[in-house]
Length: 367
Image 1 (cartoon, rainbow, N blue to C red):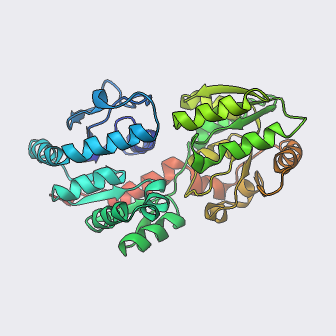
Image 2: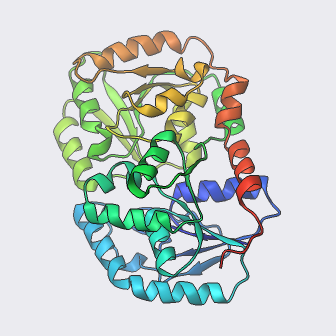
Image 3: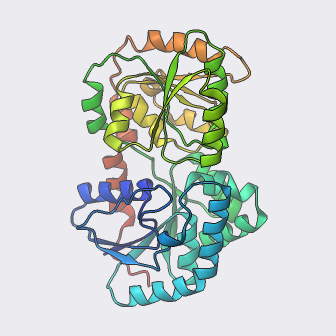
């Protein structure tokens, strides 16, 4: 039995879980969580899933996503942390399990406070951004990571970050995609005429730089914007400032199927964050056949040749970077994207997680 200690509304966590269900149906699992559906995030839990509550805090959280809401959520969970430690121990005492997999740093720290031996999987910003802005956060990260029996990350940049913070190594499990599903969308052969923004609408992802570039171009009339999360204040400021000059279709948080449909019609997708580890959504765009304009970051070195040919690295200091990227993309998309065997081998989600379960989900109890 695997215990997943994590967030019931986190797409990344449940993508991992669903991939394991497909590839290792022999492995039973249960989730223990304190978040299910709130702040605009829909629940990822199905009715048939076995889920144990850990003092669900959904109803106490603010509706909007902004700095004040984040501070309140963190303060609330900090106050409730001792009680959650007790509840976690009680939950675990009533089930037989082989090991625990904690997704995100909060649950890694919670597990260590409870004296548990866990596999830990932090998210990108928890290693690459937040620890370098707060010494207190960095100290908690280091302490939590050192208590894990194993740490998994999705890129070499993340592995180096974990080493810098905690002094310990991590296992890289590529943040793969469902290549077979994406192939079905790619083969629709729809007209590619959309310019899309698909990353989080926060300052980290530099959406404003994209809007500025779009507004300065006479050839761009509209963009489609969708995102897994947003800062409401940042988003509203952008729309109030730039929507007068540019038709922005704000599609909000899309389902996976709707997102793939958008990618299958995209001429150019924009991903220009100031920091990134291993952007799954960029891989999904590429395997959907779209061209992606990106900022120059470390994860690019891990792409295969066929994927690299679908990427345009832009210079944000060039005021014409977006127009130039669109011109280049219109040439690239004329060639059908056919992923190489190397790309599928390296980035197929089912393969990477199957190998991980074979190597690391053992029957050695971790209590």
